[in-house]
Length: 326
Ligand code: ADE
Ligand code: ZN
Image 1 (cartoon, rainbow, N blue to C red):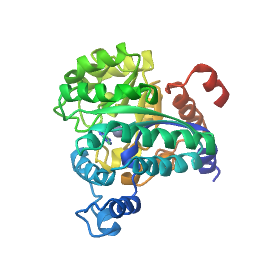
Image 2 (cartoon, rainbow, N blue to C red):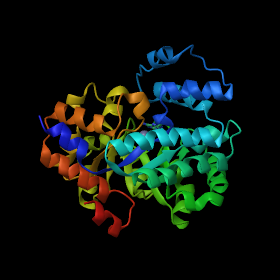
Image 3 (tube, protein in one colour):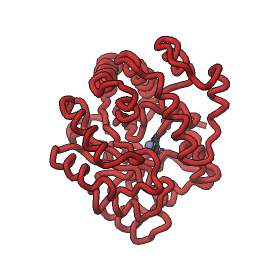
Image 4 (spheres, rainbow, N blue to C red):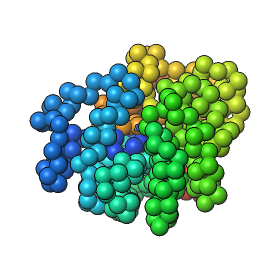
């Protein structure tokens, strides 16, 4: 079958990847040793065995524990470098990468350490492999809006190193409107704005992300199919959804890939894209998501082309650069 090879070889953009979610167990243990951090797991196999999630929160608890080994600029560099090497091998020509600074600043790591390490990896990956990579700073929605404002303030000295802001972490109980003022400020600053919405949370959170936060993309958004008026709005405006199929199955949003609603979203005319979310935790990088989803939903070359095209349409790269890739 030639389809997996087509999926592998086609140039694509990845727009929903949490860099802390690309931290493989082997690198977690290597960094723990290098930094003298004690982990609550004896070895790589024991850590991997804990990757049995029942919902978003059960994953987040382990994801934040894994990130505790990141202390130095070179740790952030090594993490991003490992992801970018895999992305380039998957023929990702452009990546917009989320990072969660509050996970690190809460442990006494400075904003500069985080951003400099990630930025240098993006720079070097462009030199080595020609991949373009940009950073998107995410606010943790289980924390307060005041803490999001403090985080923004701390990041502004590095304004040229990130292109936008996002909103992630525990969704239910933390609606987008909680962050209305900080997102308004970010828009004033000329930052791109995106938010996780409708992963586990209701369609109402997607409406709020659109109307209150005025986001340019919805991360996940798969719950939109429960709301016909919302589907119409998303189809008409083509506000993109960055969908993460393997993540949705691992976090029990869908019981298995064959039950995923991606075809329904595509057929309704939405600008959907395929992404890996937290590849080290969910069992696959971008091409694994494409190949497994295409097999499960019996998708073909037409859908492959549409999804690759959507990934560039949904990206924040300028028109001229985009034309060069398509
Ligand atoms: N942080 C990392 N992955 C996430 C996800 N899938 N949803 C919300 N927050 C996250
Ligand atoms: Zn995510």
